[in-house]
Amino acid sequence: MFDNLTERLESSFKILKGQGRITEINVAETLKEVRRALLDADVNYKIAKDFTDRVKENAIGQKIMTAVKPGQMMVKIVHDELAELMGSSNEDINIKGNPAVVLIAGLQGSGKTTFAGKLANHLSSKRGKTPILIAGDVYRPAAIEQLKVLGEQINIPVYTEEDNKDPVKIIKAGIKEAKRTGNDLVIVDTAGRLAIDEEMMNEIESIKKSISPGETLFVVDSMTGQDAVNTAKEFNDRLDFDGVVLTKLDGDTRGGAALTIREVVHKPIKFISAGEKLDAIELFHPERMADRILGMGDIVSLVEKAQDQFDIDQARKLKKKIAKNQFNFNDFIQQIQQIKKMGNMKDLAGMIPGVGKAIKNLDIDDDAFKSIESIIYSMTPQEREDPALLNGSRRKRIATGSGTSVQDVNRLIKQFDDTRKMMKMMSGGKNLSRMMSNMSAMKNKMQD
Image 1 (tube, rainbow, N blue to C red):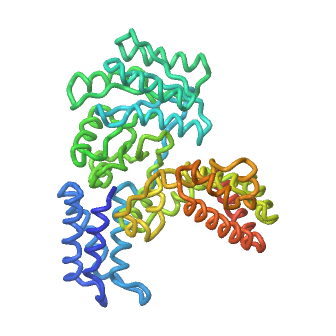
Image 2 (image 1 turned 90 degrees about the vertical axis):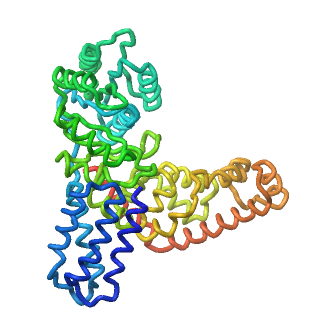
Image 3 (image 1 turned 180 degrees about the vertical axis):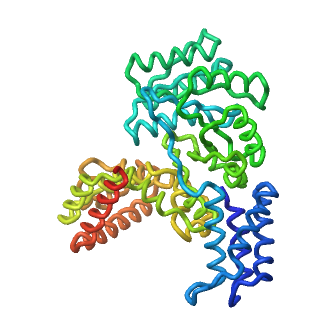
């Protein structure tokens, strides 16, 4: 997402390269390109013009410190205005009440049902809630079945009444069931349509009025651009929802919806979602999104993803093994599994400042570790435990068993040996201890 916008903005800032100061002339030229970039990203013309007008007002007469170049100052101003445009700061979801009720609304195909499962999984694992999902789409049996499958995957109950065609009665009964079973959070999936129609709007209004949810979220497919913004406005006029969820951010989207939806409906974007994996959900942080748009990466989100997989006790045990030179292929494969749990490899790499642009044309396969795993799993338990056993004949057997070549096996073993030597060097000093201490403190702070 935003790749084209990022390129266009970077190109516009080059106009100021070599300039000694910001002037009305060079600012006007730069902002002309910025406005074009926003319009190409499917941003509404008026919003794009208002945005560049604000940037110009802030930039003209800006005093440039000796250490800061005009181009750098313009990037800072545009960054701050982008963050402001998207909401300035993150706004949390309201899950107060017993049970707390969250109503999910949106058009058919926007990803409502998948998001309902993701939200249940997120609030269960991150906030300690005990959710129940309610299937309120009485028109599509496939949606009910999908919700049931999602519930099974995350071990969360799903309330359905497949013979009942009254969504209000189903949802009320589901909330009653949640009270009986002690579930403290109800997430209601509702029906959508291929387009807005009066019947759909009347139904969702009736549902909201009858259950008085603490939170109503409007789910929108970010790939639909300005159409998504127009749809959000119509829904908000009728529902007065509390927040927006942008889905399919991993698709070929120009980003106009993310940039302008808050400006139009005056409601915060609360979550973003990419991919089908049930942990592929993030809280929306405007400043971090502005970082991504301007090619600055998103190191904070990357650290948070790492912390989710970081186990301080396991790290201490690993440190002892490294210090004794006992780090083996079982430990190696365990580290690979933790990296894979963090998400899409290209997205993760793109969060590192400066890396996103360098890899944008590279095809980074999510199965990049598959051959490594195949080689390691073709080893016997003794060989994984004691890599010194891996002589020539064993390596040949492993290559045959993993469908790779002896050269591939040799290359992996060399990389493993190099990694072990480096980790041994780190454990000899205070680096690893300091790193573990810092990670532990950061993790505790995040949990607080």
